[in-house]
Length: 143
Image 1 (cartoon, helix red, strand yellow):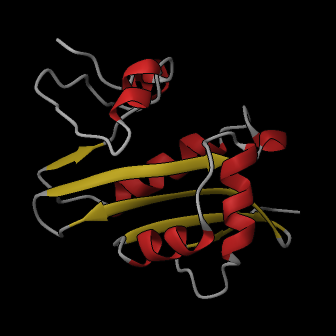
Image 2: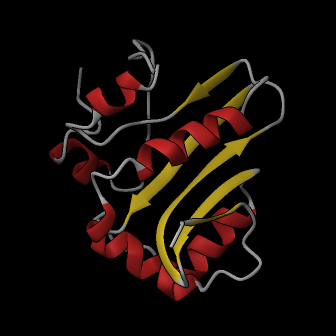
């Protein structure tokens, strides 16, 4: 059966999406928080195998200057099959015309994004809600 690609959130079950992030594994995300963040995102992509949600991603965008790709997750049974790459490419295509498309990669995943045309930024800065955890896992450093 071919995969089904959906670009709106009308029929998304948010608890199912929260579970996908947990098993991907990309951490604990509350269903209500996901609904709010996806509702506030200009672009979103949901991939289904039949009725099973197997992939997701979104982009916060202002329509002119910046599009930020984030929250890309693939079900473990479907990882390594090119679905994440296709989601990123679709979000890049949807973001066409923005002056910049940015994302931050989990440590160790930079090579994946480099193959898709992303370059390391030398001036990116961040403040995380849990700065200690961000330092521990390598998302930010003290320098």
